[in-house]
Amino acid sequence: MRRTVLPGGLRIITEQVPGVRSVAFGIWVAVGSRDETAAAMGSAHYLEHLLFKGTSRRSALEISASIEAVGGDLNAFTTKEYTCYYARVLDVDLPLAIEVVSDVVNDALIRPDDVEAERGVILEEIAMHDDDPSDVVHDEFASVLFEDSALGRPVLGTIETIEAIPRAAINRFYRGRYKPQAMVIAAAGNLDHDLVVKLVKKAFAEYLDEAAEVQPARKRGQKIGHGSGIKVNNRPTEQAHLVLGVPGPARSDERRYALAVLTTAFGGGMSSRLFQEIREKRGLAYSVYAFSQGFADDGMFGIYVGCLPNKVKTVLEVCRAELQSLISGGLSKDEIERGKGQVRGSTVLGQEDTGARMTRIARSELHDEPLLCIDQLLAKVDAVTPEEINAVAIDLLDTQLRLAIIGPFEDETVFTGTI
Image (cartoon, rainbow, N blue to C red):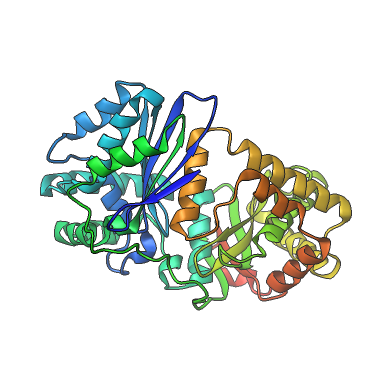
C-alpha cells in the first residue's frame, strides 16, 4: 500500500494486488446525509444521482457507455458520513476509469431539467425502499435512537423534502462541499501507484487549490443525545419487523474488535445464540440476526427479527432474556472461538476482490484511522479476550433498550412494558 498527498490536500492511496487483472478506482467524498439540514434531507443522495447526468465534456449516455464499452462497472452510493463514486475495470482501462470518474465528480452541470427528471427517479427509489419494511424498520430504529439529529434521518430523505429541494440548494451543496481536500482517491488491483498519481494529477489539475489543506476527519468523542422508548409504524403487513437495540461505540473505539466477536457469536450466523434460541428451538421467526455499526462519534447495536405479528411479544421476551443472559454470564469459550473464526473468515473472504480492498483502504484514510493489513486485523481479533467481550456486553447492553416495530398494530400501548 502506498499513499501520496497532492498540493491542496487531495489524498491518493493505492494497494497493489498481485495476480489480478482488474482495478477498482474510487473517489470518496467526506460528505453524507449527516451534513444536511433537516429541510434539505436527502440532498447528498440527490446530488449523487445528478453527477451522472452530464458534464461539460460528456453526456449521461457517454458517461455510462464509456465504462460499459470496456466491460466495466460504474456506480456510486451515499451513506450518512460519506459518498463514493467508483468504477471497476480491466487494468489496461484504468486511465479511462480515472478520467471518467474524476470528470463526473468535478464537472457536473446540475442542469435544471436534469434536477426535475431525477426528482421523479428518487421519489421512485423512496417508494421502492418504503415497500420493504425489513429496510424501513432500521430507519425507524435510527430515528428512535438518535432522535432528530442528522444520524436519525433517512439517507434518501422523505417525499416532502425531495419534492421541495430547489436546484439552487443542491448546486450550493455541490460547489461548497465537493472540494479535493475533502476527498480520498483510492485504487486497488493490478496497478502502479506512480501512474495513478500522475493520472489523478492530470484529471484534477484545474481543481487543486495549493493553499488548501486536508479536511480533517469528523471530530470524535462528541456524543449526541439519545432517544428512548418504542416507535410503532402501523402497516397491514403479513409479517412484523422489529429492531431492538442500544447505543454503541464510535467507529474508532478500541472495543470494536471485541464487539465484532460479540455481535457475530450472539447473532451472526446459524450457530449463533439468537438464531438457535429464536428460530431453531422455538420456530418463532425465519430471519433473525444481531448487528452493530459505528459512526465517527457514536454507534448502535441491535437485533432484527421478522416474525408473525402474534409472535412479537414472545420474540421480545426471548430477546430480553438472551440479552440479560449475555450481561450476567457472557459468552462461552466455544461461542467466542466460533465468533472469532467467523470474523476472521469474513474478513479474509471479504477482501478477495479489488472493490472490497479499495473500500477498506479508502475508509481508513477518510476516517483518519490506522491502515492495517489483513494480518494485523486478524491479530487484533485473535487478541480479544473473554474478559473484554464480557465487559463490552455489560457496558453496552446493561441499559434501557429501544424498540422500533413495523406491522399491523393500531394500538401502540400493547407494547408498553415489553422493553
